[in-house]
Length: 123
Image (cartoon, rainbow, N blue to C red; front, side, top):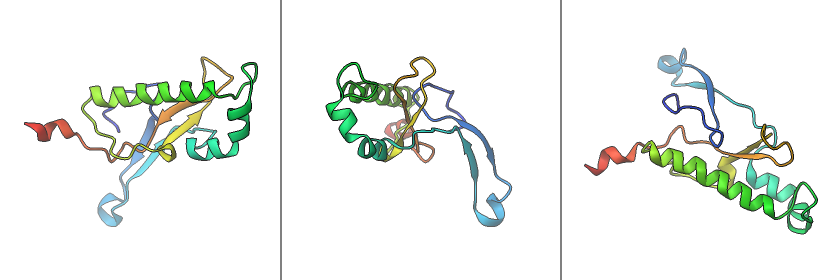
């Protein structure tokens, strides 16, 4: 994760601590806070608002298209950097406040720290 530059559609690593790596095999990561949690639970909690909300409401079915696009942009960036996520699922998409559009949360791909640099194996 430390080699990836910050992107709007990827959860950023703020810092890390490896002081317990040799003794306990633990590596601690400090990630940005995504106040709305993961997409899977957010969809469950707001199902009716998303499915039945009209276009004037903050949450409606158009949010699904916005989130799909944002996830695709995050995955595109990973692909451009030759990183395979390996476990893309709604539980690994986090939602945070969007600084450009305060109405609907911004989708960010998370849990790619254990992803594989797979293009190295294709040679």
